[in-house]
Length: 295
Ligand SMILES: *[C@@H]1O[C@H](CO)[C@@H](O)[C@H](O)[C@H]1NC(C)=O
Ligand SMILES: *[C@@H]1O[C@H](CO)[C@@H](O)[C@H](O)[C@H]1NC(C)=O
Ligand SMILES: *[C@@H]1O[C@H](CO)[C@@H](O)[C@H](O)[C@H]1NC(C)=O
Image 1 (cartoon, rainbow, N blue to C red):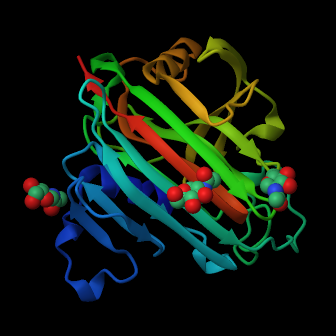
Image 2 (cartoon, rainbow, N blue to C red; image 1 turned 180 degrees about the vertical axis):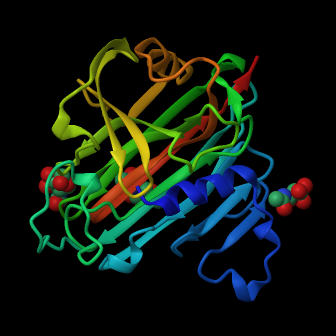
């Protein structure tokens, strides 16, 4: 992922004062601070986002590879459901129409860290990330978190070959609020991936097998994102999830504590759920519940 990714996430987590920017300045990156009653809206600019201040969420169209892509990416906020006896859920979707353009350079594994400044539109370069991010109860230590309950239901249709995934992406650091320095850690939990997407660190082989978590076992891959200097820890399931996931993501963080990635005293600074994409005409409809409940 690009450094833009980390910066934008850091900004979103901090609810940046940029919300007050005059209209003339927000064309390329439209930021809306609104309530869950917001009408459905399509976010198609390269960094358009909607903060739903009376929910734990921001909806973000992070099209960081737009300049090198042939095509479009939109993220749609549809609505928030607020059942009487359970946690709120957000209904959203991601539509990609991105042409497959074969790489002209010889690229090497791992796919997500190839250096391609002059070849951004190639098949092997991630183009963006459509996601719902947390805005509440971040910047707390793992030990201060009671649970991170989540439900993620999705369905994808694609009319051309699609390369990308469905995942959670969190950032931790021993420093409160840090999601951009090289001592921050990026944690990915891939639920489903297709089209041959591989994680950073793939060529080094799995660093560990984490058994019996969310009903399957997982391979852990680790490697540095050369763009950001941040080490990415990706867990890939032995058995992919087919459109539905439910769990307490604190168990994921605890599994990484057990592995020695960090201690319980580390801070959870960023957390979100989304879909990464490389190419393809695809439509993902999703309903997500995700929140951090503190002790
Ligand atoms: C968003 O709007 C709400 C309600 O008007 C307000 O309380 C909050 O401070 C706003 N947030 C930002 C970052 O402007
Ligand atoms: C997503 O939702 C839209 C609007 O309800 C619908 O037209 C489309 O078929 C859905 N796509 C998938 C993959 O479920
Ligand atoms: C959807 O994408 C998958 C993965 O790339 C591919 O196997 C499948 O053929 C695609 N479907 C269509 C209709 O192109």
